[in-house]
Length: 295
Image (cartoon, rainbow, N blue to C red; front, side, top):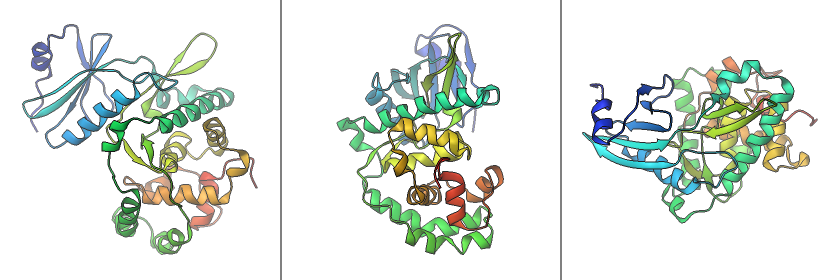
């Protein structure tokens, strides 16, 4: 696809100042001066643009950490664009190797509080988000999970366990909430105030959905905690879970949603997260999602 003429769009919008593309991310995103960010969505991604705009408007000022404020939106030459306020800080992914265990634990608590606040946001506009039928979404994912994971290279010893494991896990009938769906280090910004690190921003809402709150714990456990169950425990206690709720049933639900997630890649996770003591999904649930401090 031909590169989008971002300079021409900035001129059209009357934006001044240097324009520099951020190196990370699957979509083209540009810093415009010190205060603005311009995000572009290729033809065919209009739904993602609408989702992100809708969610950012609903979140404005309602979380304990900043989220980008919508400055403008529109369509030009077949591309959708979203102009936002710029948040400053270093990504948690970049800072992670330099953080001490206590620093990580403190951030985990803050992140848990942030995720709980996100899930508590109630705005009539959010009812427009997909899926409209959460139970139907879960059933549809259940029907394709084995084929998708086989295509991604999952070993047969794991594939054979999927049907019985998913049949045995009771996901209940949770009330749908706003989901980030990619609550991970790359989407969290940090700043240091001279005494401690604090969360300075939460980004990237184009894949947001409405559904079970525990669906968001997939990214929190796999990509944010990275299999570190002590970090995960601090996050979950910050969220509001009681220690007694963080049991084996909880861990099994989290692994079930990991398998059912629309971006699931169990073979990839097995390569990067701690190995279970035995090659069973029950052992995997305990290893990745049973927070440290529980038997």
